Image 1 (cartoon, rainbow, N blue to C red):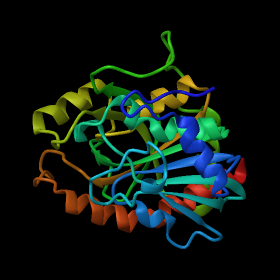
Image 2: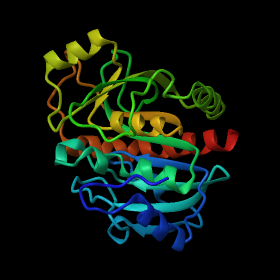
Image 3: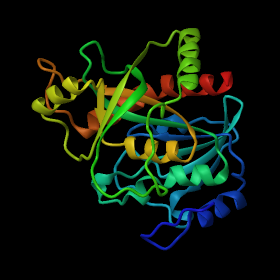
Length: 270
């Protein structure tokens, strides 16, 4: 089943055909990398790299810290597509653009979808560099959605099975793993102190500008989802100093090693 992109008249099937021709057929899993996490893909063995610019209809990111390529590799013994870079609603991208990697992974037959992001930690116990397993989400992004007809229950969108495996993998590797609710906003501004207080009252543990639309699309298509947030700044009272994108990217580079280790070991345990 294909899902057309209205913006360019190019179907996901055309993009999938190109990746199959490049040797990236029948993945077990797909991983989407957030800001500053492109080094996740460095050193992956036997990797096949396809630039987004080669893929029909694939949206191009203009945000620094996103490599802009699909990487086919063996990760944790699973055939995996790594999407190194994403586009965001705040770039003026349509919902179809934002969720294109999800639709492509589903079209190619992936069953597990791992989504990562760089986030602001608003749980007072969090520190820069912490990894947070996402247990649930709050979607603060408004606008037209592009999902199949009907209304979808988002309860259980983040797989408890995958979270249990990730906890076990983190314990084995002695990686401190937090867990909490992710709030995805429209962006592109970092949150004000008042917005941080509101997010905490809503029950969020971390906040960012991505993920929620992608998870909605993945869950609607039956993919088993695991979300992982890397805390790259902690905008709390007394610790707030005006976050910059450069700081987020640097924290992402420092934390990418632990992230790839945990994702790999989680896939290996499946």
